[in-house]
Each structure stands twice: as structure tokens, then as C-alpha cells.
Length: 107
Image (cartoon, helix red, strand yellow):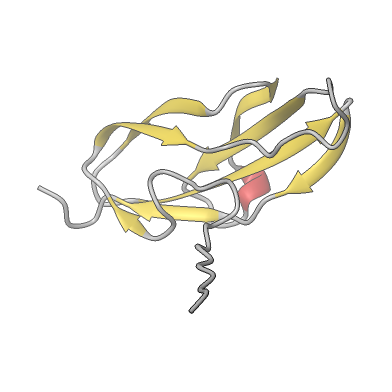
């Protein structure tokens, strides 16, 4: 009997996971950039992060860089929103979903 297993992963595979509860203090945001569409091309990203559900009102903490993590400081009792926007060859490629995490109930 042949079987095929398919594992679904959220776009960008965000850490902390979307909807997670984490401890307040320093939080390492991590993601995986997509592979470039053209061989030899690079993928860069912008990352917005903050407490406003309207993501564009939040701070841009990464600006057109080829990185897959950012260290942020999260206050206790907050819900945070973050989004990754990728570029290939300087052209907007993917606007990712808005991810959330909170610091509401972690010791």
C-alpha cells in the first residue's frame, strides 16, 4: 500500500506560532523566506510589528533586508500583530497574513 503524507505549514512558518501565548520580555520573531522565483535572485522582506490590529499603523522593524528573524520586546498583557512582506528584485512579491501572539497568561 502506497501512502502520501502532506504536512501543511503556515506561510513563512512563523515563530511564535500564530495565536500563541508567550512570556513577556524579549521575543525572537522567526520566519522562513520563500525560495526565489529566478535562480540567483534574492528575497528580501519588510516586517511590521506592534499592538495595532491595523498592521500598517505599526512600526516597520525590518526594511527590505534578507533576514529571517528579529528580536522584539513584548510587554505583559498585550496582543501583538506582525506581518512579513517579501520582495524579489525590488518588486513586492508576497504580502503575508497578519500573525498574532499574546502575553496574557504566561508566567
